[in-house]
Amino acid sequence: MRNMIKHAISDFFFEYETPRQVLVKNRRVGIVCRIIQMGVLAYIVGWVFMYEKGYQIVDVAMGSILTKMKGLAFTNISGDERIWDVADYVFPEQGDASFVVMTNFIDTVGQTQGKCPEVPDGKNKCNSDADCDEGKYKRTGNGFMTGKCVNRTKTCEIYSWCPNEDDRLIPEPPVLEAAENFTLFIKNSITFRQFHVVRSNLVEGVDQAYINRCQYHPTIDPLCPIFTLRDIIELSGFNYSDIARLGGSIGIRIEWDCNLDFNIKHCKPKYEFFGLYGTGKSDKGEKASLGYNFRYGKHYLENNVEKRTLMKVFGLRINIVVHGRAGKFDIIPTLTAIGSGVGIFGVATVVCDVLLLHLLPKRDFYKNMKYKNTKSNEEKPTLPMVQTEREKPQE
Ligand SMILES: *[C@@H]1O[C@H](CO)[C@@H](O)[C@H](O)[C@H]1NC(C)=O
Image (cartoon, rainbow, N blue to C red; front, side, top):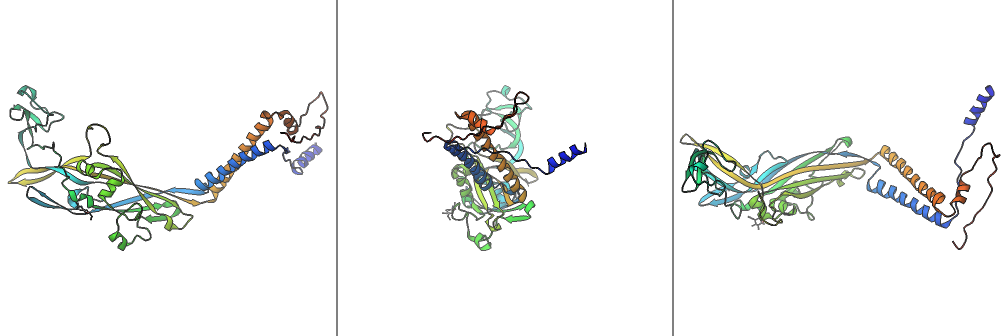
């Protein structure tokens, strides 16, 4: 008993086993297997390490955005001269990442609560009083019907804010023509918490003097955070005058892709522009509900009567999103990537073995060389015959 334990211990501790290798001297097998191994190696080094940067840990950023529009417009609508500044044409005013810049509008001045006929825009026609259901309203209508059909307009009379808005004619060119030169200033800061890195889009070289004179250009001034409305619309692939007249929606994406193994000053933003919703001019035929617009009322009292000016605003809706990603060398992903690389390298061995032992014409010979067969009981195990096989020259 004691001997057995002693043997087991000495077997375990004083011996080491390693797999027997078979060296196959065959040019074709050699070349094929080396090519497979090279392919796997190229994948590990080129793709996993260099392209995917498998040696880095990655953090996704939190970003914040502040915006500020600047610019003035002057209008002269039938003798009524007006200056329009930021407080008049930006909605809402807080400088959010999502806002609307008015470029065109239809105003209906001096509306009061009362009775008037619907605007004859073809949507709310009537032939007799029977068509106007008293106390009801139509989905396309503007107020509750009084039950009367007005002869002059051939539309129902309604209780409503009167006179009704008539938006059949959208001003062309857009009322705020100067809007093309309005500028948008974007302040963006971004935090990679894991790396304790805070960056702002006012990077090295973008100082106050530069901001005062620069204007974004994709190749000449790609870091200038000041954009004109015309550039924003055209860089996103829309036609400026269509969008200015009917409105539209545009996304600005601030992309940070930082490699923190290099100096932080190489961590710079990239601005991208996407048309999200436009006038659909490229499609054939008239599309329903073109552009972007909304309405709001400016209320006031006149001789103690509540009145309002209804504004139908056409404008550019801008949505700014930040997308940030930073990577930095770390030992754990490096070891993981190396480990998985070694694992994938094993695939090359499997493929070569399949080729060698199952597909080649001389597979039985190689099988014999690779595996040592033992036959229990019937025969005593024999030493494997020592064979050498050299590649024949004509192969
Ligand atoms: C916008 O600015 C450009 C260049 O300064 C100028 O040529 C153009 O007339 C301006 N547009 C309007 C509507 O003022």
